[in-house]
Length: 243
Image (cartoon, rainbow, N blue to C red; front, top):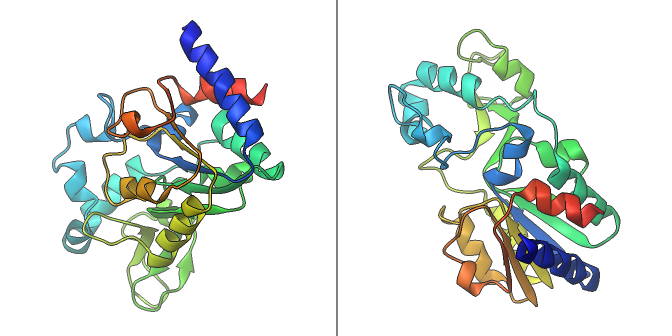
């Protein structure tokens, strides 16, 4: 316990010495807001459904079983009732101080923006944006989550969430912006992610800065490459950073 506290003090010192910090976060950033993650023992992927969640959240399933996709999506992906936690709020303060230059997230819940972060690159899209597949008209999240059946556009087309499903590629511009931010960072804080999902995990290879920091409850495949590893809850770490 004492060792982790010392590591948090070291992290605070590294932040103080850095002027171009990038934060790269995963599901663990939002779990303390109450949003369940995917891969932990209590996560979404370890619950029992008619179809595996990985299949339900795939492009082919969306196209062929749209009704069942939306039943699952509306029940499990609705993040509108959740609020930002201490991690989101501390990152906003770091950005306002000029320290943090960008947030790169694998989350689709929109909580970074809800907290007030301005430069956020959402690798996997956002539940807050939805578009008609025919005319591309925009619909907000309320429209989708409150729809009784499959959400339809005024033109009759199906409305699809702007989230990256399995079998779909990441948005090129978002990836390019994330790579540029990481390449120019003097410090990269990676938090709340198992770093097992490619291509997102591959972004770490672009970091050429001074300090790579990993914060995660469990070990990751990149622990041995990091300059500082903290196996602790994000809430505990970021509440200490804020003090």
